[in-house]
Image 1 (tube, rainbow, N blue to C red):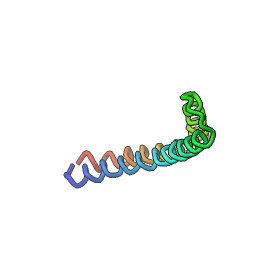
Image 2 (cartoon, rainbow, N blue to C red):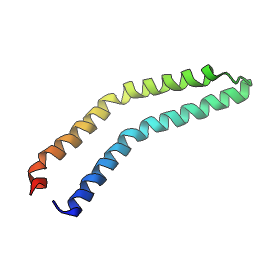
Image 3 (cartoon, one colour):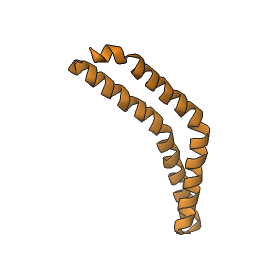
Length: 89
């Protein structure tokens, strides 16, 4: 296995990880901004008020994105294991 192949595998792994994490991070970012704006508008500084909606947003995001995330993960794993013979040389 050449160094270029290793770099390609690592790059593909990092890009897949990025594309799997980006939507959930965006959901968390938007939920955090909205909750902060509501807290500023109502002058309510309760920790439960900031934590519970953010957790609910993540849960909804995971439930909605799970089929796409599984498809992306299975596709990556299939392509990696399908080229296993090429990597062994």
